[in-house]
Image (cartoon, rainbow, N blue to C red; front, side, top):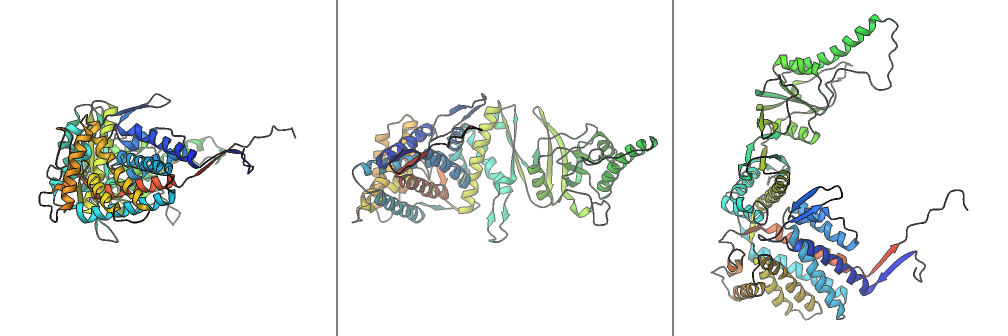
Length: 545
C-alpha cells in the first residue's frame, strides 16, 4: 500500500518500463523464429490437449494466454494486423518489440519519453512518405504474374511453400471470381468472405481444387432424394419443417378420445400444407437452418426436390445472397393465413451432391446474383488441413489488398533496409532532440532482415552489410537504373539479389500498416510510467459485522 492510500501495488518510472519491455520482448522471442521462408513452426497444446501446429504469428499469440497488460497490447496488435491486412503479423510484433527495446535504452541515458515519442511519430510519417514516393511498383488487375508472385511470397514461409505455385494460382483465381463493384465508391471490391474454404482430409495437398460456386459439407435430408437438380429454385428457410406442434405452455383439453386422432392428423396436415406452399411456388431445393423430419422428406422425395436440414446460419445467409433468395422466418401473412411468395426464391443453374474423401458435399453452381468461389483443401490429416487453411487465408488477403491498393513493394528485407538508410540520413538533417530517436528508429528497422537471415542459418552481419551498401548507393544516385532500391535477401542461396525481378513481392498496404501499427503500439506502451495493481475487494462473511 502506497503513501497515497491506494489498496494495491504501485510501480513507477523505470521499473515499469523495464517490466513492460521485458514482457514485450518475451512475446516477440516466441514468434521471432517463425519469421521468413526458413522460419520454424510452433506446436501449441492447450489444457484439453488439443494441438495446433502453425507459424502464423497471430494464431500463435491468440493461443497464448498472456497475463501481462503490456504484452496484451502486442497480442492485440498482431490480431489487428491480421484483421486489417491478413499477413505480416509476425514482423509487426518483432518491429514493435525492437522499437520499445531501443526506446528503453534511450530513457536509461536520460532522453525524455516525450522526445522519443515525437521522434518515432516523425520517423514513421517520413517512412510512409518514402515508401509511397520511391519504393512502390504500380500494378493493374491484369498483372497475373505479379499477383501470383505476391501470393507465393506470402506462402513461402508456410507449410505449403513447396507447393506455392499451385496454391498461389488457386488464390488469385478465387479472389478474381468474387470481384464486385462498390455500391458507393464504384471501385472494384474483393470480399474474401465470399470464398468458402472446405477441408477434407485425404489425398495430397496439391490435389486441392477451386470450385466456381458454393460448396457446403452437408448430406441430403434423405438418401431417397435425387442427387442432382438442374435450374434450381432455392428456398432458404429459418423455420422448423418438423411435424407441427403447439408452442410450449399451450394446453389442449380433449373431451372426446376420437378428437385425438383428428389432432394428430391436423399436425401432419399443417406440415403437408407448408411443403405444398414451397413446392407450388416452384422450389426444388429447400434449405432450412432447423429440422426436417421424415414426413417432410416423403413429400420432397415424391416431388423430386432436394432438402437440406441444419444448414449453419452463416452458410444459409451467403447462399441466399448469392442466389438472390430471401431468408424466410415465417410463413404467416397479413390475412392470418400462411403463404410463400415465389419472389423469395433464389436461382442456381445446378445443385448436386458429391462425395469427397469421407464426407458428402452439396455444390451450388451458376448462381444468379453474384459469383461465389469455394476452395476444397486436401491434406494428410486435420492439423495439416488447418494450417493450409490459415496459409490460404493469408494469401487471399494479400491478393485482395494488392488488387485494391494497386501497388506492391519488394520483399526480403528490401523496404526495411531502404527505410533504415533513408531515416538515418534524414536524422542528420534534424537539429532538435528528436534526432536521436529517429536514428534509433532507423536502426530498429534492420531487425527484420537480420532475423530473416538468422532464421535461414545465414551470416546476418555479412548479408546486412552488402544490403546496406546497395541501398546506400541507390539513394546517392539521381536515377537508380539498376534498381538497387529493390535489393533484398535470397535466403535459399544466402546472397543479395533484385527481389522485384525475382518475384518476391508484398502489398504496399501491408508494409505501411505494419509500420504504423508497430509505432503506435510501441508509443502506447512507452507512454506508461506508472502501474497500479489494485487488490481485489475482500468479501465479508455473511452474518458477521
